[in-house]
Length: 439
Image (cartoon, rainbow, N blue to C red; front, top):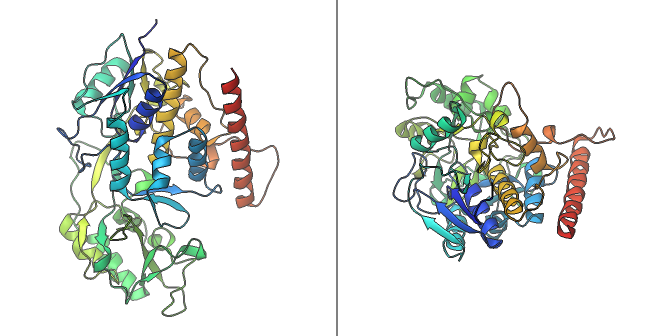
């Protein structure tokens, strides 16, 4: 069937904004549906597009990390959102962290002022048959829309619970106890570190595991995504577990004692001015009063001013491996495409990548060109393969070297191996871009 050169994009999150921009830049008219500000989900608080909910970090920017490789691939492919992230970055060592407000404000301005994009502030619930529709409604898809998706696919929803970390003001942090330093000396000492001795750690641990948590709905089974595991759940798995996770002291030497502490809580800058810091790895489902009481036990945070408490919310995703083909459109309804975290591609960068990838396939289809496809030697190609290759058990996954095609040579040193994988991926992508331009 031939479709008009007009595309409906549902959701103005990371995937939806990236896709809408890519389509519009090619002269394709876009109707972008976004239910904010009229209707907000339990996790969103701002009216801006591409709101970063859980963290202000987009992950490592190093090519020794798969998230860093995926960002570099997106730069090569002309990603708007990575460009804006680079422009609004805040100090975070090797990570690409951004000022969430200026990041979202700039994206909102670009999208709303684009001549080929019409923003419709309504909840989208009716999927037409005669137009191409890209559903990038995110893991917090409205009940009405997901009911429509379930009806179309014959699939019930999959879900897991995600959590966000608290944010405190810099002025309220006691820097007589805390200190600036990056782990292993990487970066320029951008993280604030709150040290704990053994006695302080175990007092904190005992209060944390016994603190009162907000209740989940009784009819829902609790599922937690490993990368966003609440700090209290990590603690409950063993009394020393946190010291091997978010509170690990390795790579940090306290300048006040010139020794490594028993445990360390890190805080990362959340805005450009350095007025706000989020507590790294402290996603939580504790009640707000309990967060204030327990987290104030952390040395340096005894008088912390919490401007946002941690929250926990349900994330929904489709069984992409059964429903989607390699172009990210439905196998049984080829005018419908999906992108973003609803596909099970986990994390901010995967959302951007799937949005860009789906848009390129829609563009090629409307321009009567062959499918846009990336091999799994690239980070983007690997995540597309993971979410579209049928498997018995499907759970969300973010970028990682484990799913990227192996090298033809055996390299024992892990960092060297990852650098080589990134080198191969980027060479492949550069050649792919040239080939596509010459067609």
